[in-house]
Image (cartoon, rainbow, N blue to C red):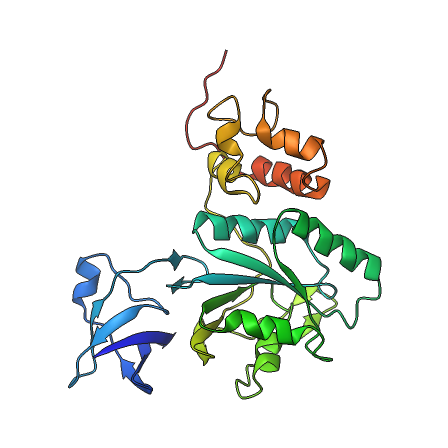
Length: 288
């Protein structure tokens, strides 16, 4: 019987098959093949023992949060409490590009952000880079109807810091979900964790993945990866004069030209420089 893993708790998988949820352990032989069943996996379970016997091929796999077979990522950032972070947004977007997953940005808490010029500036900066942005309020429901449409017939992963409103967004999309909502800590300057596990929630012919929040995202990438997968770089990096161009000090750089002529926002390049500084080289560079 074929199904999909929708959650994992205490070593037991919940598998949805034919509209029924089965508690299904995984066969020990998976360890021998270096395969670990993951939320989102399409699996085969026994009709009698309800044990997971096979994991079908995946078309995508994220390590953090651990989830398979998503085809869309919604990066959730709040406009206030916690404050919006360009650096985190570009980290998440790079992460999505590395995994060949379409990504969009949802900005929450528009009801408590009074600086409308700041909101407009954030939206315009991302749209200059052809990144879709949606501004919503989980309390007043402004902007939610457009976001609801994004989930239809997609397996969507929500990703973002603790306290930005991922669970609140899910509850606003469908009140029957009843996800636990975290609080914002003014003392810590960040949200408190509420979602402890990755879980798939069925919605409009697809699934919405609620994931644990985190205060930062340590990307497993090198400077060379960043130079290729950073938003807006994928089509440009092959046009640079140097094949190993990092878009920093090299001449005849197609990427730098885009930022210098104002085609891409200045803040995007500033964040790239910070992320590149935090990364290490994959291959040894030739030194003169």
